[in-house]
Length: 58
Image 1 (cartoon, helix red, strand yellow):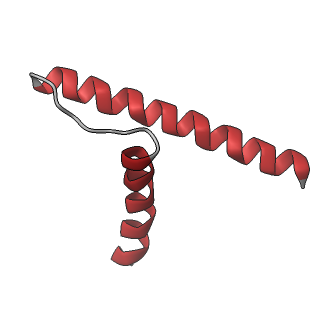
Image 2 (cartoon, helix red, strand yellow):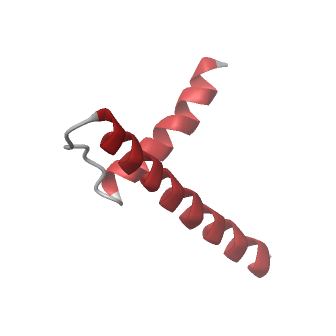
């Protein structure tokens, strides 16, 4: 059970690190939280568009 969850989460972090160049180097937890939050929003939007394209072509 844990490995299924871990594999799902690690794919997201790997994508954020490689594709989006996520590297947190800010001063303050608030700025770091904001940057991670914005990166998550971008990832979700990219994933949504990918799934929409897959749904249209199927």
